[in-house]
Length: 111
Image (cartoon, rainbow, N blue to C red):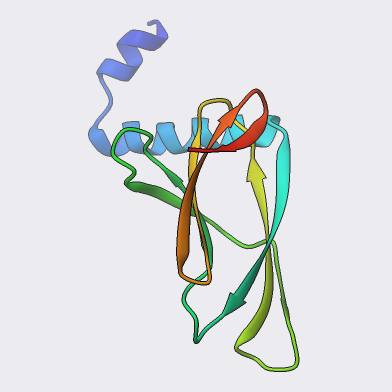
């Protein structure tokens, strides 16, 4: 049985699981850019997410690889290791302000 036939016989849950496994493998093989973003719990949330380029709907959040606080617990900086997979779009929110970026030629470019 070839791959196409195997995929046709899969359930929706199996397809979703396969899709996530493929995405993780692509990310594992790709280059990364490390972003350091400021956070302050009183000024808005700070996060990074992979989004659908057509709908801008969040597909998955990228976990912070490290977090450092300044003198107070509610403020500091977070570091994110962002996979630079060609054509991928990210929403980056820092202190409540959201911007969208797309990976073009191995670089994050504002969309």
